[in-house]
Length: 97
Image (cartoon, rainbow, N blue to C red; front, side, top):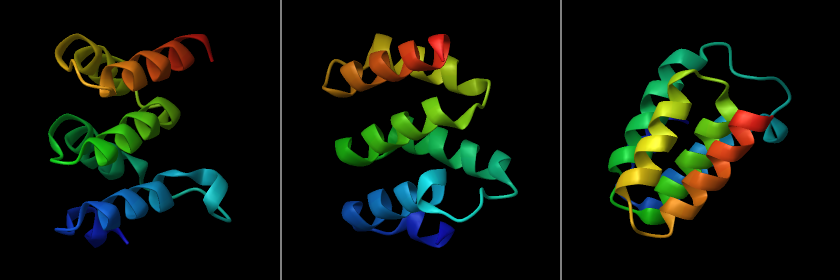
């Protein structure tokens, strides 16, 4: 499934990211989230698809990774697209949840 995070088709990357990062979609959480968090950060900052970037931002907020807050702040400050709203909402959830 992790290989699909680099698929050339954005819809496939988005579905793979959701499947991997959503604990509600699995019987048990993944054991090695550190490597996944690094990939998700890269996807949130650099993926060519805004839809993939939105899912990545949501996943970061839910991850509990300490780097997530800094990345979400960066997205909020730098990205004037609809991702800004997503980053703001996820940042608020991560700071208050």
